[in-house]
Length: 317
Image (cartoon, rainbow, N blue to C red; front, top):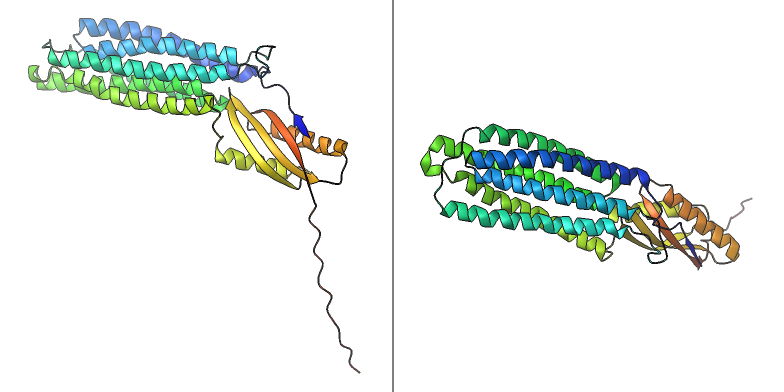
């Protein structure tokens, strides 16, 4: 006997709205920064700053993809998608991961070209622009990451990594330009080397995000700590004798649970069904974002209470 919870495609307006607002904030900031960085980099002879601006442009696209994925993920279930649209959030994260890797590759190729081609020293005014970018993007990254962790959004976490990668690229460029300004013409390509080194960090973040996203798309097992929490919640429900199996998978901004619980095999089907509903309700009322729960009832035998063994007594006269 199994008890199914509500359809996982039911809207979760608050998390989706919060995630959407964070993505839109990122789009607005990146539009402004991309214009400032690219124009300043061209005028100031700094390809590291131009590359930074290009990465900000890529961030605009990735933030839009995340925003779209979040909106689609909370669309209710329909005939063609009986389980809802939650996987759209994971697909968005998958695309964002590839965007990170693409940005890293593009900047790396152009940085090598600039290193091999003699060019003018970067202008001094590119340095304060980069410092401002580092401050803005680090602040934005932390805001987006906090929101992503609150709403359990992998796509939004990828967006936060995009912002942080931008901050790292800008910091590396600032160091390179400082070296060039202090060292003179011999170190004119220092900011290009800095941009090349920053690509390694961006690529690492892209691979990390890609690995986690692929695990979600292929329904990898949920976190062990979440499994322990779910087993504890189910075991605490009255008349549940034990938890036999527990399977968890990420779905959009929450989780879907398949649980086998053991109850007294001598009770009626109706009574077992009621226990299953109580387990389901307990899981969905927990703070663990359980979107759906399929509870399978297994028959069992209650543990017999232990009694002390009778002991012989001797009477004395």
